[in-house]
Amino acid sequence: MAAALVHPPLDYDPADKLKFEYATPSSRLWPTNYSKFSVNTMFTLFFGGEIWCPNTVTPSGENVGKVLRQAWINAYSYLASRLKDLDCIIGYDVMNEPWPGYIGLDSLDEFDQTTNLHLGPMPSGVQGMALAGGYTVEDVPYFTRSWPQPSKHTHDVIVNSDRVNSWTRKDIWRELGVYEVDEDTGRIKYGPKGKHYFKFHPVTGQPVSFEADFYVPFVREFQKAIHVALKGGKSGNWIFVEPIPNLPPPTMTTDDKFLESSEVVETEKLVYCPHWYDIRVIFEKVLLFRSTYFLLR
Image 1 (cartoon, rainbow, N blue to C red):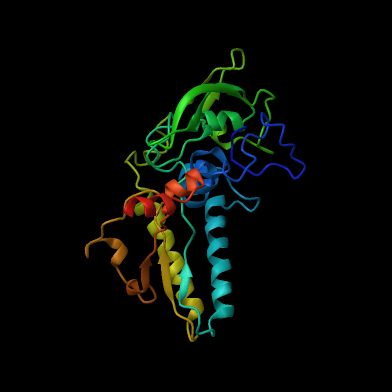
Image 2: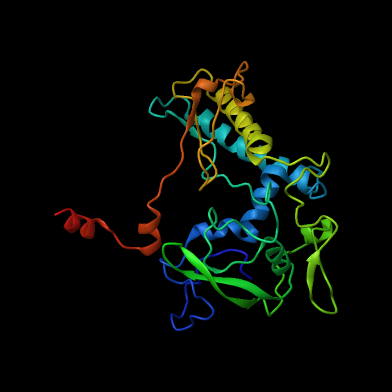
């Protein structure tokens, strides 16, 4: 259903290219998942469940977003408490490559090709929701490799012709009114929430910032819990903060709320730690050093 790019089964037949076209390591590119349904849904629930999915709650009545974030922080706090007497540890990374999900997305019609790698079938936000909801989408854009742009839209494909439903219970996005489907024609359309649902705060109507409104508060809660867990120990309490992949580095001033300190939040213990990848080598699966060496000679 193009909800995520995953590994093929162990009994994969290489001849069955139509069903498992991403069977080789060079074709399984994780970054394409940043615009896929499963990753966006889970990150949206994690960071902003209370705002974007207020009715998605656990059997005890707690919103799933709060439960997920607290479980994450509790797990790392417990780990830190058990390792705090090891002086070889310098600190903890908040999260590997945090992603906003749908939060702040300008429109569910498309994803930004400059920040989201497109390869193979790449449903738009609303198409991904409908596919996961068990509907067939006949015009999913298909991207192939190119250069200097990583990929280009070459044709459209039909996805989920078997109408497989990803949800074991309710479809939260359809129930919320983000999208609707005409049962007679099968046509997908936006519900009352509309294609800009995640761009504006549902209550205030103001544009949202994933970093300022969701990520920074989470980082501060994480840092606070880790510093408490490490109190009295020998290990370092540096907190490593990763930015959203493929975005430029942030700018910070002494006026930013992120720099405010409190009893246990020590901002001098924050480390900005982005990742860097040689995208061309990863994408083409070849090293360029040899040709560069001969050119230099």
